Length: 245
Image (cartoon, rainbow, N blue to C red):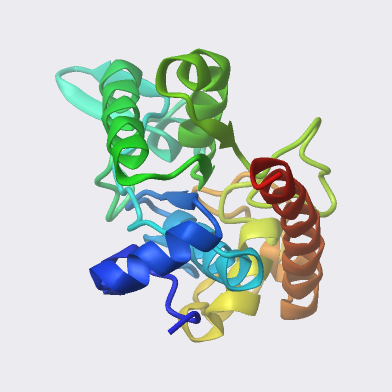
């Protein structure tokens, strides 16, 4: 029973047992968004959910369902909406709708969603909330941590700390070497590098970061996961010790 960590799969007694042992909620911040031709549209949430599942098995706590809505850069060009990698993708200075992206909401609306979620998590008995995933969503969460801690009486965290440690950071690019390596480690069956041009001089559409054709592999992904699992597990175990003093 203790290996069941997904909120959606727990019955009330199982929920109570996990909550009493570790009142931690893990909130995966995902999108349905273009992540290159080689990765699934749900990459952000698949990585954060997969990471949180392993963290919950190690430390305790409960993993919430992935949020697929989130904020991002936004432009309206001649009546058409473009966001995220629609705007920032190659070729530059040409907004284009990338296939499959369906996630954008305003920062204000997303802030309201998170506030309502935190209110419900406090009601359910959680005391610590860790949120992570899609970068603009994670950054917005981090922006309001101090305000929300006072308002909801919750201890709030992301998995980024002081510069995100570029080499071993968790989700520090967009569909490039970092996220591709993480997906190779967590869900290798969903990664297809062969969908990308074999000519490495050809620039890739809708990616930000190091070229996954050159720099991504499952071993790197496992190193990133292990580094962050150890870091966050130690951090949260200390938090639980303080909580149960």
